[in-house]
Image 1 (spheres, rainbow, N blue to C red):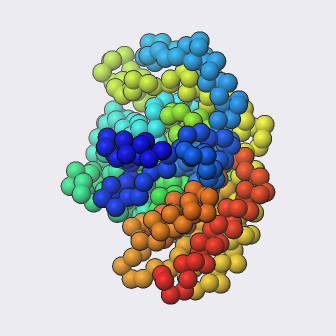
Image 2 (image 1 turned 90 degrees about the vertical axis):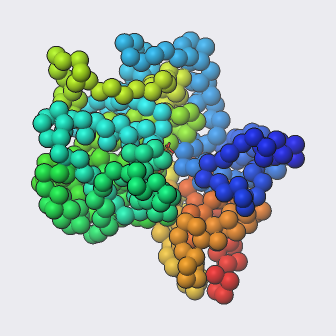
Length: 427
Ligand SMILES: *Cc1c(COP(=O)(O)O)cnc(C)c1O
């Protein structure tokens, strides 16, 4: 175990990790359901679905079987000029459960690439319609859309991308409000320069589990309609039941023009992403000139094993009614956490679907993602046998759908204990 950590320290660079101060990484040897087993045999509960991905639990037998079966039949084939059953069937089934109006699926590898594809499709379509000046997206304060350059540009540069701001393209950034008036004003102001609007519908994860009113998403839809620009829904986090509906847009009663999905698409087991679009966007690329195609594709686009696993995950979503199950888990967690509202160190307790969060008060200058509370609470939760990874001063849980009552109780009790331990004065 110590050997693994020593070797890791010599050769690995971890994501979102300050190696100058980081504690030893967890040596994980196996996983089963909601549990991670560490070298030496200790088990800890995965309270955050391994970065918001694991949907049905780790190493679910049906997912593992789909992976094995497909790997033995067709492991990989290029997706330009070739096709295969898992990719076609997955496109059919994604479109069948997606918000209405979406009719085409473009595959890629992860949430960031799904967003890149969405932005590039929209921009190139404008150019091909003779409106190349439509280049400015409207995006939200606190937005997070991934770590590639386009995704960083529409994301809020604070706190992650400050050093790269000079290289990011122009975006009109507005706060979410009650009814979308902020977005309406931005679109009116941009006029013929507006390319579209991108939002994480209902729930901004990386911003600190911020919940927005359903009326806001509906207002954004109306503003987009009024100005004739597409609404891009980044459902990379919110998709596949996390908000208590299959997709957050459906919960809000809104149909986007473009929808990005990743994370939960394979039940959180293999990298795969998809950008779903309406037929009119696809049609903007149809032409007898080959140069007007969409020159974008990743080596592992529509990897058959990932697609087969995604099909198995969709089966499980339907059989176990994962959105309803996650909603029930969120209900139970929220009941457990709500009384913490009375504590002086607690600023807010909030939830949506299967996510429940406690926002803590911090001393001046220590708020947000980089709050010193984050690493402290993470270490304390692992000590108590639960993997939580606070977004700075926001302690949250979003467990996989397989957790039972005892596991929910352990999660809730651990979060409550952590919040109490912060104390009114130590903050
Ligand atoms: C995680 C996330 C992304 C980026 O997805 P990756 O698979 O990490 O590239 C994009 N948008 C949202 C809303 C996310 O939560």
